[in-house]
Each structure stands twice: as structure tokens, then as C-alpha cells.
Amino acid sequence: MEVGHPEYDFLWKEVITELFEEFLLFFSPELYEEIDFTSQPEFLEQELHTIIPDSKSNHRYADKLVKLKLKNGLEQWVFVHIEVQGGYKKDFSKRMFQYFYRVMDLYDQRIFALAIFTSNVSTVKMNSFHYEFFGTHLNYHYNTYRIASQSETELLQSNNPFALAVLAGFYLINSNKDVDLKYKYKQKLMRLILEDKMNVRELNRKTIQQLFIFIDHILRLPDNAEGKMYKELKPLIKKEDAHMGLSLEDTAFAKFARKEAREEGLKEGRIEGIEQGEKQKAIEIATRILKKGGAEEEVADITGLPLEDVMRLKESLD
Image (cartoon, rainbow, N blue to C red; front, side, top):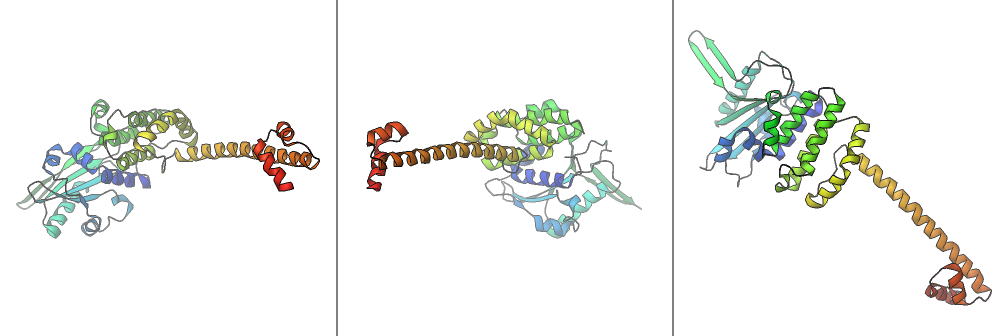
């Protein structure tokens, strides 16, 4: 998958939703400490469509607006914008300011705003909007995070599972169109989850599954490479399935698992068919011998059928 693919922004939206606590802790530890997570975050999709009229289009699909409750009882709203195309856009900072003042105008709420840049294209540091006109001045600053500028070492050392999602984005950028390198990166992340190198078992099964799916989809490989990786990771997948209920559903590995299951089923079916055919043939032989007056013990020895079965067969013939 490439940055800008129609599914790309959707994947970011889903992983942010499913791992929102980890997401907020990763990007703003200070704000995280003030949130009362005994109250579930409320994702304001309908309000987002009101605030940003074109948010239903593909290039707005990753935007998130979340209402949280602070420990002091007040509300805190969080706006997250995923800039999937990257590059310098003349009106980007202006749009970030527009999102801010529309929330303020419509809902009169405090806002934590964050823009995440997922492209490898070098960008001017767009973290503020400045307006000046005949003595009227306005400066708006917001939080930004550029994935391509991060340290792989620091992300790998993080104890926050959301770092794996960021690493997936980082590896997608750095592998570009190099399939072998992307294979290496994907296998590395999958092993981190399956071998529980970042303590993901402490999360609930649904969260682990979402992280697994995100990494699988964002680092999608050609079929032959996915098949090769499935075979290599299969022992770990089977092992961890017992621990955390990890499913291959909605992943590229699912079709290889289904194909393998079908082949095993067919094999078992053939064996069963042979066994059933042999048993039926033995019954037919036993029937012929019994009709000719053969002794039950003798028939059992000849055909290999249990003596009890031969005796019941004899009763049915009398």
C-alpha cells in the first residue's frame, strides 16, 4: 500500500479509535494525565461533518474529533488531522485554524489540535497560522508530528503499543517500493506482536487484533511474499492464538490459512473416504461368507471387522 491509497487514511482512523488511550499517551502525555478514562471517549463523527462540510470525502476521512472528560469534571475536545498527502500546501495552516475556530464557534469547547504528517515529502514546518491586516494580528499554534522525522530506535524502545502503528507508517515511508525491505520491516513488526516484545498482551484482544490488522494492511505485500511470510510466522501465530485469541480474519494471511485448512480437510476427507470404502467392502465380504454358513469368528478374522459387528450383521441376515 502506498501513502494516498484510498484505504490508507481509513486505517489510521481505525487504529486511532481502537487505541485511543495509547494514542493520546503517545502524543500528549501531559494531557493524558488529566483525562478521566473511567468515562469513555465520545467520537463526534456527526459534529465533525458539521464543522468540516467536506469531511465525508476521502481526503478528510481520517480526521477525528473526540470529546473527553477531565479529572476536574470539565470537557476536553481533541481534534486530530491526518495529512496523508504530505508536501507543502499553501492553505494547510489556514485550514487548521478554520477547524479550530469552527469548533469554538459552534460548541465553545477547548481544543487540543494535532496534525500528523505521514508523507516522506519534506515539508515546511507548518505548526502555526499567522494573519495580519492593517493592525489586526492573529497567531494560532497547534501540535504537529511528522512520522518521517522520527527515530526508529526510540520508537522500538517505546513501551507504548501505539509506537508500533507509528513504526508501520515509518517503515512504509522508508521502504518506498522496495518489496524486500518492506517484507523485512513487516516481519519485524509482526514478530514484535507475536513474541510480545512490547507487552501487547496487557491490552484487550480487540485492540491487539486492530494493531495486527493495521500493520498487515499498511505494509501490504505481493501474494507470493505474503504466502512466504505466513509460512514463516505460522508457528508463532498458532502459539499466540492460544494466549490472546489472535485471529487472521481481515488480514492478508487469512486466505493462506483458509487454503491450508481446505487442503487438510480434503486430505482428511480422502482418508476418511478410503476408510469408509474399505469398511463397506469388508461388510460385503462378511455378508457373503455368513450367507454361505461361515462362522462368525472366522468372518471376523478374515475381514478384520469387530466380532460384535459380525454378530449384529448375522442377526440382521437371519
